[in-house]
Image 1 (spheres, rainbow, N blue to C red):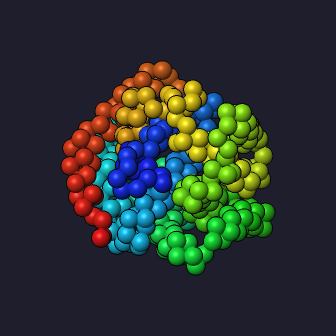
Image 2: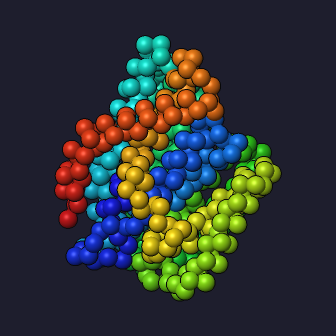
Length: 361
């Protein structure tokens, strides 16, 4: 879903564009792409995924607030139908192309029915952790993150309805955020879960989306204006403080910290960054997010995310270089963007009218 489809707090008659969000998508995919292209020692790919999670929670919740403002209810069936129409074409095309490359001997990997089933129906993160046998095309391991998102959205519309009706409060969300942090601690210190297990498990990563949802709710209710003052010095201090926290989260390499507090601190730090990026896009620091080519990359980011690692691994497998080589970086960037542009033009864009009709009202 493009960031140009909704604006927080806007009525139906107002502009529906959210500044900076497509640019933030572009930043996220660039971080992930550079990490997988062999620069992970410099660019932390996991942080790019966390930004994706936060952005997804923020955008979906903003859409729900607009639907509630217009209709006084949420059409949950239509919500899930729109998710299917949005997600299915790119992921199915990516899987077919990836398996085709492996079948032709151009990529390393093989076909396994249950693994493909887990990728299509969004339980690949747990299948990858606990299945006795698993086989997939090299580079498709990143599909774990889609499973986390879709597990979250199985319950979030219901929670949102309870919040909108006053059955739950924002304090409930804060308690849930604390509970997830404590659960990570229990899994790491009590059950001995590895950092990777916590990184890709739904039950330990819910809050990466929930912080984005919380920001959208605070903006909907007007509380965000109180929490994040608009003065230039206040904005500067908030953003500087957020960047310092994010940098510390990247610098600290202790497994216990990275498996527990890291995600909570990143979620908190991203809240002012997103708030000011959306409400003050004209600020110098946020202007690049709204450049035309950044918005275009953001528009293609979902499909680029799906295919880029497969392409990188295939290029290396065919002896065109090693991860970290400039030719691998440039060639995989061109091929990934080209693939994403084609999928958007021929598979995603034709379905936009259908998605707009699936309102449920």
